[in-house]
Length: 315
Image (tube, rainbow, N blue to C red; front, top):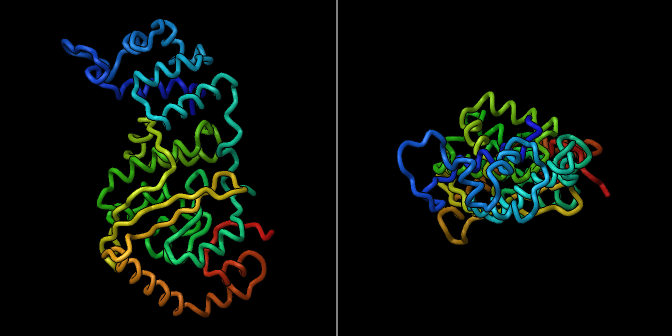
């Protein structure tokens, strides 16, 4: 990926701002989508030459005041403003921030704490653990039954954009795609040069025009919960609340849970799905018993009724 991530972000956001939304009068035909560089500079109160140097990566140390002014022109929210400052900081120092996703896929930082695995098994809701790259590290049976992309070993982005089963499960498909890509960019932060992240983005960009389009927008969104509408082939339509909880002592792992409003049709459908998943698990009792009898991580996972694609701590 480019080493001028700040410039790429500025260009992408500039192209998304309509002149009239920035208070500019539009006359004639404009060849440039969004704002012109000189218009951004004027609105931000800086010189056009200085803004050009920022976009081209020839100046990598903008002040906080300059960044705030540009953020106001682009109408960035708090999350996007923080992301802009992170890019500027990494660009100025020549190194990415240390708390992001470098080496996070498959390393020790992907070990799920034992207590969290136990929680997955007893929580009684669809729940899974993911890392910064949206790899599903562990999932309970109900999450695995709810959607293919929530199974341990899957990458939720890969399943969403390259799979053939997810699109029909989400009535709000476009909204889901956009939100996921924006949250992914927020999750990895300035670590776009991490080899594992670069490989994943390259794979998704080659295989999905939708991902390429959304990734080029440079949208960012907080890693927060929200409402999601789903359709399940066995229990029908569900409207669920998704919660994302940080797991202490890990490198950005999140515990993701889905729940329905008590007494709602979705709550009934979720309860039915739980019964179906329990029945399927009971029918596969022989395999579960073999997993439970094995030693180490696989045995623990079998006893917990939780699948895990990675090793985890036993302390």
